[in-house]
Image 1 (tube, rainbow, N blue to C red):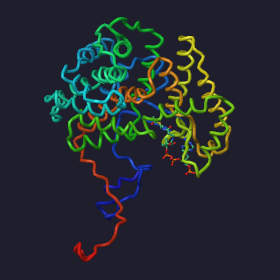
Image 2: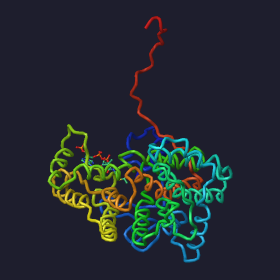
Image 3: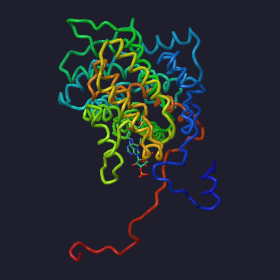
Image 4: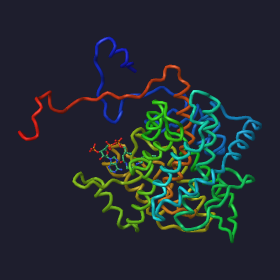
Length: 401
Ligand code: ACO
């Protein structure tokens, strides 16, 4: 590891690394990834064990505070989060300003940023207590705002949070209950969704987390920073991939059509890529995809649905992994390959998938934001550039051009 700050101070040399393929933008104690071995650890704990034994709230506590909570600490944390789930009534008027067919991520960018207009105390980022309150508010209010975005799109009334339900159970309730019929939370579905949230909670310096850090490095308030993260996550190369993956699987439709899509993905003249395949860091299997594949089976069997798209996904994975192109480029299914099938089976429309990702990733975003602000050496993020424009030239008045 070369500390280029020292290199620059000593020699004036700086590095050129678009896409940050080999440049660390910060140090962090939250998450460790070994992309060659397919390892993902949060604060030292493997993702497989966390997703098997922990709840999303436990993982949130772990990422935010550094250690797994005792039973008392967890109860207190859950109590705190639960008490922050309501949003200001006036926020509902923000939703009504959007077209009904607005993408819910467009709505989320707006309403999460707007939280800074409601919680002035949380905009004091110099106070660690206020920073933690802001983090709790964000983690707690994301499910409420996400459910409201969904309700608005389907023309149903907003459903208020219920404090007697779990974090994930309450989200399902706010999303699927209607005044005439309370949604009965199925524990298998609740657990599966909670696991999806765990798998998406953090992934070190991905594009959206780096965006949150960069925005936060200027001293911007936490709500504005998370809104910036949501905007970045929306892109199809990042959080939008699960929506794109499911759309692709539906378009393929039947196993006989898979070879044609594999051929397209390999054709350099065709911009098409297999969505849900490939990862900047994992050059071996994405460990989250393994857990996700197992969870699809559990959900489909609980709901007693046999989704032909799942067979297409399994066969596409098998055929791609046998193909030299994908082997050479080390392209494997990523976390997004299977998640869309589960979310769709639960009843979420595809345009809500990235919203669910944002809900879960808020935990990682606020944990990184806190870590960065607490660092006494923290500086404003200000990348350098390699200038490729014209050299200095004389200005020519408009009449003479
Ligand atoms: N299908 C076909 N070819 C691919 C794919 C794919 N899904 N992904 C990468 N490649 C090829 C590229 O064409 C490139 O080939 P080349 O070397 O001949 O030019 C090579 O593999 C390397 O690809 P890059 O785009 O340079 O790799 P990078 O690390 O920048 O991109 C990314 C990673 C964006 C995830 C990419 O694999 C991709 O676009 N995948 C599909 C979208 C996706 O699933 N995104 C979700 C990521 S996970 C997440 O956000 C939670």
